[in-house]
Amino acid sequence: MNSKESMYSWHLSLRVDRPVEGCTIRPHSYMYGKKLDERDKSSSSHHSKICHEPPPNHEFSYRWFRGPTVEPCAYEGCPRRTSFSPHDWSKHALGGSGCSLQCVSTQSSLYKSTFCNASCFVSGWKTQYTIQNDVPQARSSTPTRSRAGSYADDDDARSVGSTNSARSGMSSYNPPGTPREIRVDGPNTPRNIGGDSSQGYGGGGSNEYGAQSHEWVEISRAELYIPHADDVGRKLKLEAAAYSVESGELLMHRVVKTDLVLSRTPDPEKRNLVTAKSAAGGGARFRIVTYNILAEIYATQQQYPYADLWSLSWDFRFQNIIREIVDVGPDIVCLQEVQADHYESHLYNAMHEAGFEGVYKQKTRQSMGMTGKVDGCALFWRRTKFHLIESYSIEFNELAQRQVTTVMGLNPRSEEGASILNKLSKDNVAQLVVLELAQQSMASRTNRDPINQVCIANTHLYSNKDCPDVKLWQTLHLLQELETFVMARGTNLPLMICGDFNSTPESAVYDLLSRQAVHPGHPDVNTGEENGPNVLPDIMSITHSHMLGSVYSSVLGEEPKFTNYTQQFKGVLDYMWYSTQNLRSLSAAPIPDESVLTRHGDALPSTQYSSDHIMQISDMQIVGGGAR
Image (cartoon, rainbow, N blue to C red; front, side, top):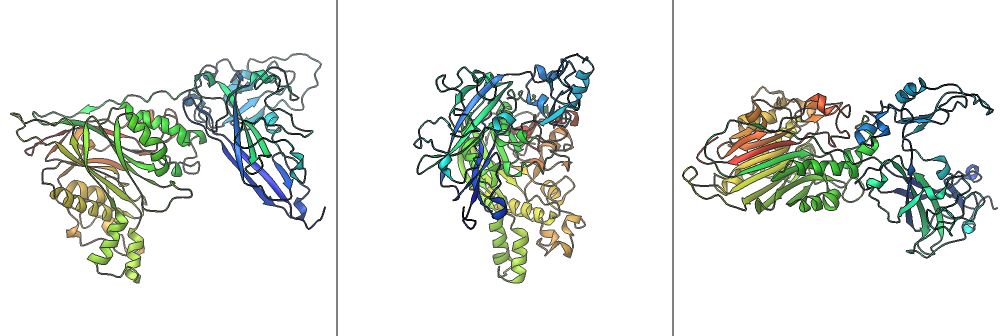
């Protein structure tokens, strides 16, 4: 071999999230090449192969198999022997280890018994006894550990990792787009991964690894797979093969097993509503919710280390979130942190099937990586309850540009103008819709001039806790925009402002919304020069004309203890505000106690609550004549 000849190491990465009944699982497959230097040319691994050129354009082919039933834990007192609920299989329930253990002592009655965690092993060990046999004693009786969700050695060893220097070692192939059996003509891999071809996929007989092939039943050749009830309590096996797009040649393949398939997450607990003291009269009623659903781009293991990686996946959380929303029977739904691609692929279709229509506005920043990886706000309404009359969106970046150029008369490219724009341009947005009742209220003795429209605003303000002045600026300009909008349509248009304001009840944002003004001594308006240029107007100008009430404060007498519950922060950030002259808050669903929130996790998100925020729910009524 010419030592100066370029060589490449091909790698095929394959990962699958833990499968849960009803939740789509998708392969994370990626093939790539790495140019080798002289010292690397003789090295290879199970999952790599050495070739003369980088990998060509390729496509993947997949096959899914369902495994046999297995005993999940040898300890008879373990609840996971009979339950595959995600609540019971989270690392919170398992004690945080995420590891299964196997007894390796050949003289123990528990030899080769597998336990789901250390606690069950200790409990099970109390029942073991010594047996006499001729098998040599293992070097150590310490149980072996395997990470939950790790690849099984026997199957992963079958993944193609040819050490040949060219692709000639991979002689068999099929034309692209046709069903393929993965065959590898090599000394270290079986000719047919599904078993003897005469038996068919999942047929009888055994292979060189000692596994009975009839135990694994082929269930799909699609890329995506949705586990169902028959899969619960079993492992799945995924075989992925990379084929050349041009020639159809099999380039590499890999086989992985999942962990046990978990059952569908139990339905969310019912949240009872507390009813406010009712007043006579009034018009139409509607139920409204606001919910920050935690975008996938923010749901990382680094941000939420106490949560299982599989419970942070969007496919798992989406099923819980959509059930939670639909279960409360809302008429209007205000959502924040809705990822753009997920609105198109998941959320809109699911809500439309549930009887809703909606609009979406993404933040004005660029996507984080691939297209659609940016969050925004979504607003839905029940089609049988409301019709859309008007829909607008507000971009705070645009308002900042107007503030600098028109109001302050600055050149946005000047040092002062650029500094202010840089501080205010945080990409946040707001939505604004006017909805009209599908069945309009008629005039009556108690309601002579019924109101049949309502204006709903949905927003998500800047999150940085060190920039309270920016949040106050955003709130002030949102209120000013709403003043102009509502007054142009008559002063009697009911208004609700919902969303994640990223501001606690002690903030200037809360004061401005609830009291129409901010105290001059409030620390949020006296941030100092170290916080950058001053972006706020004179304190006397920080005001508005809306008469707003907080739903939760009005119904329950105070704001909740928290609407955001993580290990790093626990507090109130989300609100539903309403115009008190023409809307009445009839009820609100209290935020669950900490004991409930931490039942299946140290904090949120968890297997029970799939966002780090808690949904707020309220029944509202349209009123007239200044009734509250």
